[in-house]
Image 1 (cartoon, rainbow, N blue to C red):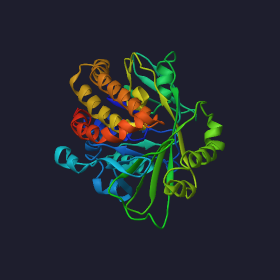
Image 2 (tube, rainbow, N blue to C red; image 1 turned 135 degrees about the vertical axis):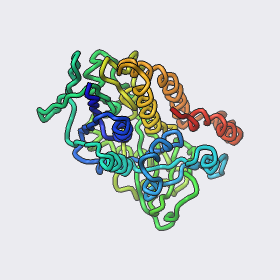
Image 3 (tube, rainbow, N blue to C red; image 1 turned 30 degrees about the vertical axis):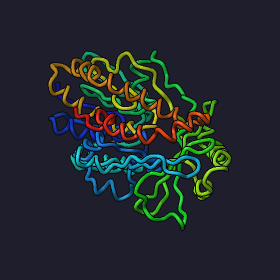
Image 4 (cartoon, one colour; image 1 turned 120 degrees about the vertical axis):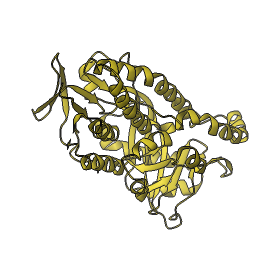
Length: 388
């Protein structure tokens, strides 16, 4: 074997995996469907220590902090009373870094730049349409008619993975879970200094959260319930205005600041949230799925990117120890699947807690959440302290 590895997807996990495999002696090429590193992707995401410690081996923390917000959280009830806080300063002592919120396209740029600096080629505008696997190797075909052949192929191409659809055509498709991850960016004169934590409020009819970055920009997010799955056309056109108007209605009796932030937002970010039904297998003989392609999770506990980064370390270790790629892929799934499924279930529980509660539930929440948060610091260690 020539140790040629093809990676489909240059989001976050793809480039980081590429660097590690290249360092391990593989000949790696990365192919990405988008035309650039994600300049049009306006979303932001959380990076917790379990994923951040992987990323920091290749991307300096100073680069990430150029445009970021803290991951600490302060919780408030509808009346604006602080009912709990979960700060991240303890994390640096335990894990050598702290949770960050980072713009997705900045993260893509940094990961791709790191790959290119390590001489890992990244090809853009290469949309995967089919994967063919034989005894001799694996070939990926692209929408422009070109192809690439290698010894193994890694599908790091997200929730709607073309690689997964090709190698497991009968697998269950992603399921819309009636929530849309939404948010945006705004600027207000009275809210321009960086905050020490995300302000997370359980409003009368819904949940609202915001923070201010080092650049004085307000980053906000809000889960939006929508029973009907939006079409791609709706996501591009009417959905954002629908969400903006509905959020103004939902928060009309909450802190007036929320409405001012929403109105000051030029373009609402809207991403329907999907779950991938559990896959019996993440791999074939020569192809393996990682990250959201194998195990997409809802964004409620900020683990999507970090789980993908964890995958990269674990997969490289398995490839280094197994006799064949297929044995490595089987070991990788065996090691990773119980953990990711546990985290996916935890994320669903948190998402449900953000929906509109009844009065009795609200009374108990306001009085008990502080005790719950203190207990969570210890309970989160199994997530944040993970090492491949």
